[in-house]
Image (cartoon, rainbow, N blue to C red):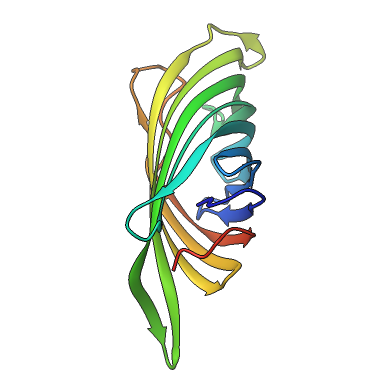
Length: 216
């Protein structure tokens, strides 16, 4: 939701599955911004261990429009690099522990369009009123594996194209801090064996904005 040069935005979120993400962005000029995002997950469960790491950067264009200039449109293109590994835990016929391990490294190329607006709606709690912001993020990503190991043995790599529609609601706690709820999903356009779409996204976190003009 950039509006002018010098604006800085930082956000942190967590999902019910324990995936932690951070998002940072800076408006280099009145219409050009840069992004730096990261994601990490380390989940150890009875039947499966899973780890995931991703870092990505992007640059793009933003503008405000509408009768009161209270709508924001942003278009970014970027590149990311990540890794993941999964260990499936089972037992053999003798009841002894057995493990199956999958490891991969990958590159990610993406285009992202953000649209958000400030509406004349507020959330009321006792005598306090909190403005609400709504927005949509549409991202298309191409991901290709650079390495894929199954139990330490190299396997053919895969690629896929994903569409990632995301919807968010922000509750303004003060001019610089907002509470954000995010929901969305991932759609894979290829029927791959290994590189497939992930689960739906539900996360909650905080967004901190410094600089920029008010959209009220």
